[in-house]
Image (spheres, rainbow, N blue to C red):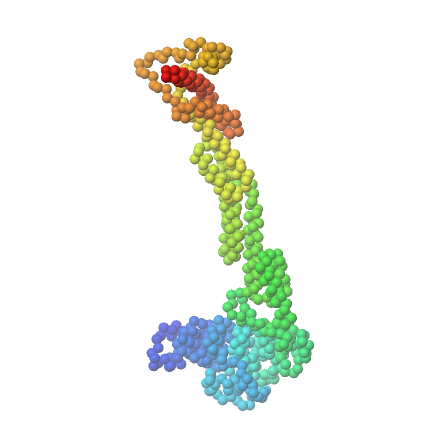
Length: 584
């Protein structure tokens, strides 16, 4: 049959763009769209089938007793079968009590009687049909071909739709005959789960045992035949009772002790289309395992969840595919998060800061890899990862400065920049020891800058041509006293030598603003002395120290001179005040 259609293919494209006139539509459907519907089913072209039906093609149209649904079932095109069933293509094959009023009436004759509204009665059904008689009027059914070809998923679709298991072909074979002769263990399992007798004989007198060549199928049939009581209810099976296969235990039960479950075929399925019968005890066990799995998914316990998944796999427990997919996804999520957390913890302390950038890249790659694999990490893990990357970046910047700072050449701008880096490091949670080390470096830099500034001020301080010998004013007599001998000093020594005339007037001696107050000059000298004591620790440069040696003695002389001068000015001011008071 299939070869005949393959020899006479139509050019499908020639019809799709044609626009039918209203008066020619019916003829067009008969001559073009109906045949094209069959050819499209043969080719597996679902889109063209949809186009044909839109144009008015008859979904029940047959060629040599084959219609689109039969072709789709024979070819194993699940999507096409699903679509045609949704459009009502299975109606002629549905089970009906009217078909089975007389046990002696041919199933095919009954089929013809109830399906004349769908198929044209071109031939009269034979009345004498039985063993040894070939019924040429019998039509193949979608279920028969799906069973024979071993398309278990389509068999489930057809049974769920309600197609009749007992319809027979030309030789009196029904679905169980076709499934057994086709040799598909999976299809036979589906039929035995759905519920079917195995004692039917075809028109040649063959039973399913006669047609069986597959050992596992033969084992099922023997088990069916030898089961006399239900393992759960202990009810004895009477002649004519249907026994139902529990796919989990592999044993046969009564209808009361078992139940059909319609399951999703895979994680992406939108409809439950997989038939599975379970005994009541098997269902209790599956339900128990599923409940435990749900609890483990909620508990975030990776080890226990993994153990449960392995247990389910090892014992082939029939947990729903969507729940298992959810468990796999959650397992991978937990595994990934554990891996990420371990990586983050391993970088809490980094010996070589030069490797930190590489570590940050590793963490970024782990986050990106999870995203690419559609592993949706908890927000807490993502935030923690970003916090740790920020911390590592801040630590790297800080430790780089620690390793490359020239303390003796520090500038205020550099101190400000490093201070900002240190504050960022503190805010990002960088280890306290690095922040403290950086604060120590900053303090040395600040002292270097301070020492440099004092020396610069000293160097810029105007030079005096002459300083008197060290002396002080006696508190009582107000006379100048030699600082060494503590005796009155010769006044001549306190008079500066005469300035040689150079033709121009000597410029006025102007004190710098910072040193107008003698006290400030003294503070600067004292502070520089303190810094010089720390010279090695704060890494003062040799250049700075050489300048300090040259300027420090001069500034001390200047300070002593100005201190006495201030004292004299104070005495003079007090004397003027007294004289003015006497005059009043």
